[in-house]
Length: 307
Image (tube, rainbow, N blue to C red; front, side, top):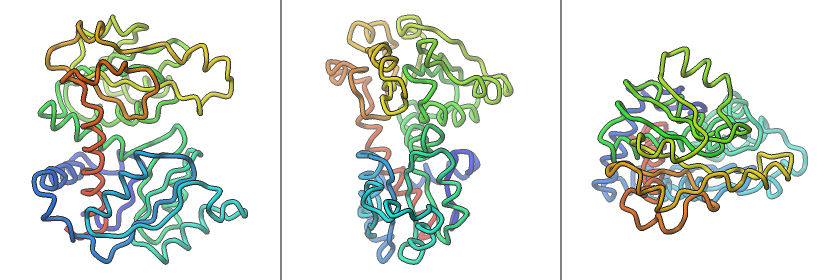
């Protein structure tokens, strides 16, 4: 049972529990009207301490489509944190008003702290460069639906593999399924952290290779997962400027890719995917965004125990 459970790390739920969420999401996709009053009388609190468009609106849309209501704030300056209030006191207070919390915060581990003080489920909507579990659920549902399962894939991950929390979470999540392989595409300065290689890939005997160009990987991958070079994760502006255009996926590179490959991106993009690629039927990043709303609907329903 997922009722009353918080989701801080994608691995907080077993593979079987994730399957429950995905199966419910599929039912919602097929017949959304059957679920339109499921959360009537329930309230989601969105506590967003750093800017977000897709994740916040996706959570809010998910709750509204379930018939529930939403309260919250979209930046720290509009909350009592500007007066010095701690996360612990904020969530203890908000727990009195809402039934579930979705929280995004720039500091790693903040969602875990919130869950320790909250009397209601806390869903981590991103904490620094650490975890972003609902993006991971979004990615898994996208792959599961479009590639007919979560095993036997070659996944190319491209861009900021050092700071990209979506990449770290996806590697951990896909490593739980059989016969997956990773191709890690990044400049040396933004390569995957050693602890991910050591504790996730090598520890579990999961094959991977590191390359420096997209061209080296395009004809091998079933899934190409693009990420932006994140300006907000850099202390050094010059280093960001030097690396920001390292990888741009365009039609020329897509011509090398498999016919049944899919292109994913957690969004927002800057210029790492050329707009011309949007017309390629293998471009799935906007479908991916919609899957994100459905999987959040399923997750909210499950942790609230309304189904």
